[in-house]
Length: 281
Ligand SMILES: Nc1nc2c(c(=O)[nH]1)N[C@@H](CN(C=O)c1ccc(C(=O)N[C@@H](CCC(=O)O)C(=O)O)cc1)CN2
Image (tube, rainbow, N blue to C red; front, side, top):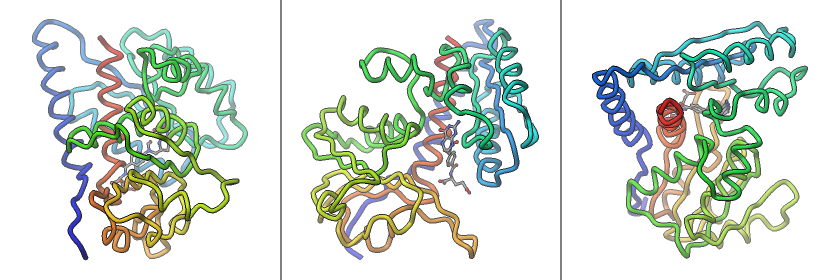
């Protein structure tokens, strides 16, 4: 394997959480109430349970008061709206997070737009998406913001670089394109109708892959010296967790690369803490 350096999301997320914990404890000394995060999970998706538990543990580490609402899969949209309305009104709740995906009978867009945009710590509400698109202040989606924080930590500046984002989801791909654009990158977005994915991938100085398919990108396509941000998380039948890019092969080409696990996942969780803290100010 040639020399590549690891973008260590686990380490940087711990540092970010330590910084948030320090800020919160300072505010508590000043007589302010702790930030409060309501975490809502509908159903029994195993991966979602892991992510939600990671978020609750991060709240404990940072001093954010968390309230978990675990609802059965058959919960009606009406009942979920009623809970969101209640949390919107609760002055001790500064952030509301509804874990996605939701069961099919519940419309995700309706749910995210039901959340008070000032408490929308996921940054998925149409108002916050609009603010991001217009480069105005507002709550920003955690994974893309976490990617930018990680790059910044290692002194990597996307300005002038060609950033190829594979995946155009609301949660990651599209907001990440905007973050990269605002950071001065030239951005290409590849999606399900993109032809010649290999051509696009091979031109990336910064390659971000967020599809959730470990076979989407052939790592031999990656340009020598590229920075590889793997946002996919795939659990194999043997229980192993892998990203969307074959790490061993990509590491041969990359100058910097994120591991899975221990890369963007922990950054997503730490950024949620950052957003919750900021929403409480
Ligand atoms: N309401 C939201 N739902 C979802 C989001 C989101 O940002 N808001 N993003 C993804 C999943 N996600 C956040 O919830 C998430 C993904 C991964 C991790 C994480 O800690 N990953 C670890 C491995 C964990 C494991 O063992 O499986 C890692 O990569 O090291 C946390 C959160 C979809 N839904």
